[in-house]
Length: 139
Image (cartoon, rainbow, N blue to C red; front, side):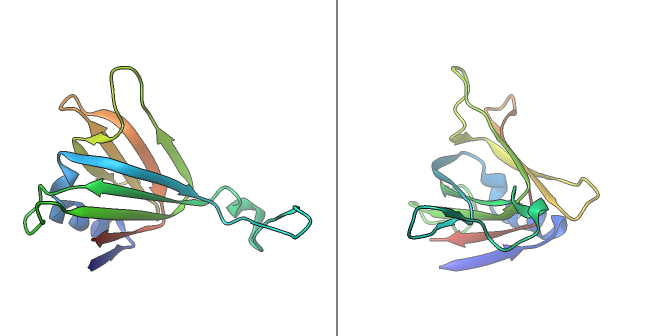
C-alpha cells in the first residue's frame, strides 16, 4: 500500500496531478467523522479542544480509480481529508456526486487546502471542502 501525505496546496496539487485529477473515478464510500464519545450514562463527551474547533471533522472518500499511470485495473484509492472546516456535498436528479470527472485544488491564499470535485464534462461542483491536510492511500 502506497501512502502519500499532502499538507500544503503545492503538495495537494502534485498528488492530484499524479492521480490524473481523479478523472473518471467512481466514489464508492463517503464518511464524515467527528471526534465524539459517550459516558456510561449516555452523556456526550466533547473533545478537549478550543470551542472554535468543534466544527472540525475528517472526511474519508474511497474511490475506484484506475485512470492514472501505475494504477491496477481494480485500483482503490482512499482519500482522507483532515481537519475539515467547511464542506458541501451536492447531488440532484441530474448530477450524481459519485461520478468524479476531475478534482481541482484551489489556492485561496490561506493555510487551508481547498478541494473541489467536479461531475460531468460540464464541471458541476459536487464536493467542495477546506481541510488542513490530506492522506492518500492506494490500496
